[in-house]
Image (cartoon, rainbow, N blue to C red; front, top):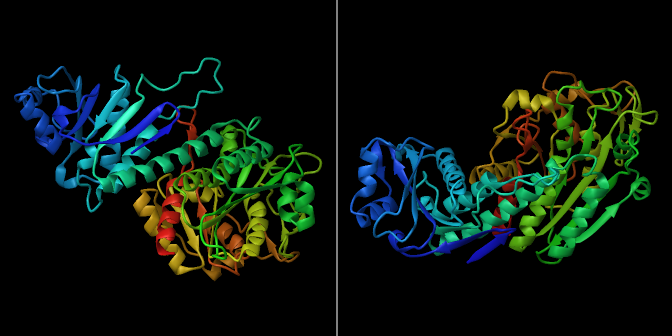
Length: 500
């Protein structure tokens, strides 16, 4: 079984490690120079040369360390790369993923064009071989990802590596297929996030959605301002007023399930640039606000993955997209707008715009009589303060849906943390002039944002993911999209398919 994305190809290999012809074979070494099963086979075939190299002190199995050996006798591979795994009894998901990343980067810095990775044979807690192989594919995609299309001289992929093979069973082959689909979806989400806002406009996102639809047979509709006006999307369109870039409301359908089956609806915020509107953001790090479309980008990335996997369920993707800029037509603090639901909103801060576009999308989602709705958005800085960059914040009005997302997040290793959605927080959104205000003050800012959205999702099972801390990395040297939460969304849909 093999799959291909651009120049990099993946496949499953069978056979004993010492007999596999390749430019480089990767094997694990645990703490205190304890060899993994494949490393022991390679050591025996080479007459103990691997053990001798370790005894020399060049490597002791420390997590993430590497040692490259060349031209070992009676081993078909030209190179053997040893990767430190840490303590065998403590091999965690994180240390396993770190080892895969270290291995891929080390191999790619050689002249190797192909490699065999045996690390997915290792036991990682209670994870099965399908999981370790899927994660190996995902982490490989992350490690080799480059975004250089905006440079005059493209750097391209590190080294010449174009094929990676995994030693695995049939169960692992299924994991590889899923892992590759997720990796491809993450690549699309990362590319969209990293594309600057003068290129990645709402129109650009609509074009990309149509390309996905053509490739995978989705139904696609991209609604312009006039169509949204007819629907009464006053809240969404109020945010778009400050920009000369026309807003777009993207609608995708994957009809892989039975006719009449209720769909899962994914809703992604796509503010292609967020200056804050009249409530202008400070200039520091404003360059990162092209990532405010990461929720919408993740929906498109998830659709690429489910199209590639051909999941047998019905999925709807909704992506409201516009810019949030200040000009004479922009929303002003104190303005009152009417949402598609008929509820009125007093805008106290124009920089709390994500919820203003999502609320109309959540109302629009009702027409599909959904089995569940999951929205995702880089919604609040408060979420980053509360949780940092490791988990996404999870809110839900349905316990079973919340548990399904938590389980999928753990299985995808794209983790979430459940947050409260208590009625007490709703009090902070009171307005004496409208049905509600769009902010609830500094205290519990991520929670009150979720409470705001919950007012538009009362008629179905709903969950909200605040991905402000997980969708991209900040800082001049680290800035870039992560592709999250594509792994969580795809894993959730895979498991949903299994229940249907």
